[in-house]
Length: 342
Image 1 (cartoon, one colour):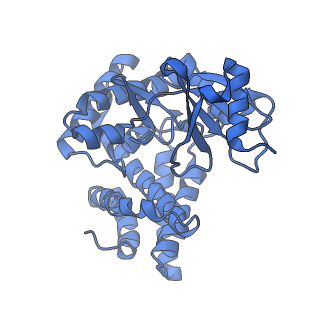
Image 2 (cartoon, helix red, strand yellow; image 1 turned 45 degrees about the vertical axis):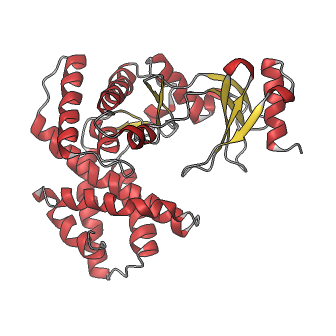
């Protein structure tokens, strides 16, 4: 079987009619995904991103049954700035995509500082509202995101994933049977509250590493797990991001900007107290889910570079557990098993 490099070069030759000598191919560093990515540079400054689907999983012949392509089509209809799909080769599991650039929002902040990135965060919120409001308004049964959701069981599964891989796995906590029951009951209570919220189209992983910056414009990637969920889920991913910790005053400013723009688009007046409470509650679930991924990557995958983000992630959790009486049971059940805050 030809090497992956040769498979990519052959695909580009079919698509663009180029000789392999005209193409410079580079494997890109991966994040937590099992997919692999490459950048192909062509003459005259042209470039593509090539996505290789997870090896061992057969690629569907019909591109519209592949979650990434299926959801990309829907987001494109909503005028979201997602990469264009140029070509799909199911025989080798390769997608030829528009290149949205090499700089993530996280990179931009580390280069220029948070203050300089304020306009980019507003733009990220504008893109998010297209996904959530227009994406929901254009509901289409053909889009698989409308057939899966953050229901009580999904939220609960993610919290148990955190317990298994981070509390009991990486941190090696031994949870007594009584504490285990209290923890699961507190998890259930939180999940029921979140699952009862109105559901909108949700990106599901909307943070600084999945937002690209090119020519001053935000582009959105890694949306293949989109589903229905609370509005606050993606906003908490962005503003209580494990990779970039925003100053509290900027976070407050951006929440208000989000609500003003949402109300303008929907012609509504949001209950700010309720919105903020659910924002904090869903942040606890979302941050624990992220911590679960970091523990899983370290213990199961042997990728320990994500552990550096646990302190800030647990910091968010501690902050919110202290704020709401609805979280008192979870606070009492969980905090004794978390590391001391640095």
